[in-house]
Length: 260
Ligand SMILES: [Zn+2]
Ligand SMILES: [Zn+2]
Picture 1: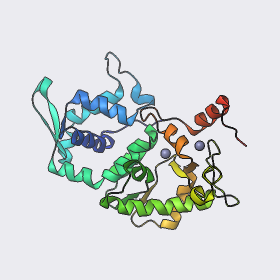
Picture 2: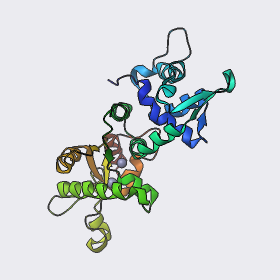
Picture 3: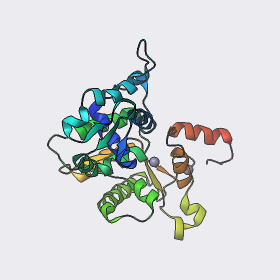
Picture 4: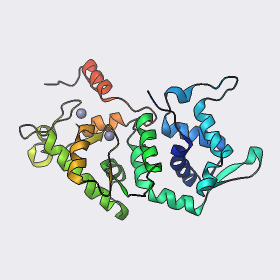
């Protein structure tokens, strides 16, 4: 069952939304946009007795009532009543910058509400400020050519990718887990052999002092080799990501693809 979200876990995504919106956002916009990117489920969707609000909205409102941003110095509420908004501070911008890769990774990969909140909690509780590293080839795939700041993610992700390919290759072949498409078979080995994309079913983090080999070994259980088409279908609607099994069932039901 999904645990309820806490205010601390809402800080980073809120700062991110402010930054996309010229540094400021009203509470009602914040509630709507946080809901879009966090996709809350379970108890957080329960309506509060005698009110039109659910528990998720209330948590967002509490950010203001409890001075949560101000306590950390990350943002400030300004303006009065209907015109009030919250604005990111320089410290907030810095905090966001430090954790931008993690946040982008969590949001782009359509993880579940539980996985999102759990990992935002880990980031928030990272008291001794260990550097957290992510593996994310989706950032690289989506943005085409990698930016300089992402070179380290690129290298890390390639390591995970190569390790995963090694694990999932059977008898010198690697095919899509969902539709069985094989790039080598279709395009010919010269072009397609060994090509595959890697879908993350759960977030994969590495703290700076974690052993890379160990991390890779654990990470591979949360990876699925998929063809580019199936991968796009999985992430087609980021507000409503689909489960792998649902995709497989639908491919079978549709009957066009001959799974051998
Ligand atoms: Zn496929
Ligand atoms: Zn994916």
